[in-house]
Image (cartoon, rainbow, N blue to C red):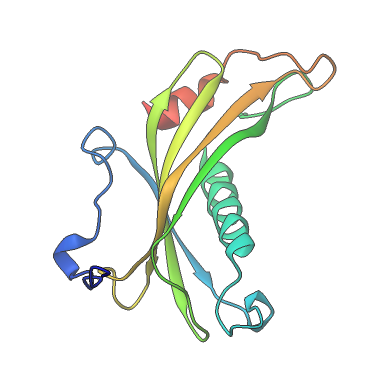
Length: 152
């Protein structure tokens, strides 16, 4: 016998972790494109990563001061994506990013992908770890001051 699945109510939408909530970084609006769809007529799972990348770039463009140079560039080191419901076309989404953790050379960003017209509709949540490295050596380097300030 299987247990019936319960529908998520608006109250069940996970909020950003309490430690993250005070410092949201961006709520990036993104239009879902026809080409984002797969054979099942919803956004392909891999495209969620593209949406997260776009939101990070929108945020980084707003960071005052240099966040990379010839000796310090960000790389994605880890990604956790929880797929909560499919995104169907047409749709406008919002990707929320928040600073979850600042390390010596890494930054953990919490994320949520929401419906722009109905923020109670959660499509995805999770986190991404970005590490700043020296591109010549591949070794971690300290986070740029601009990133620390933007997240602090």
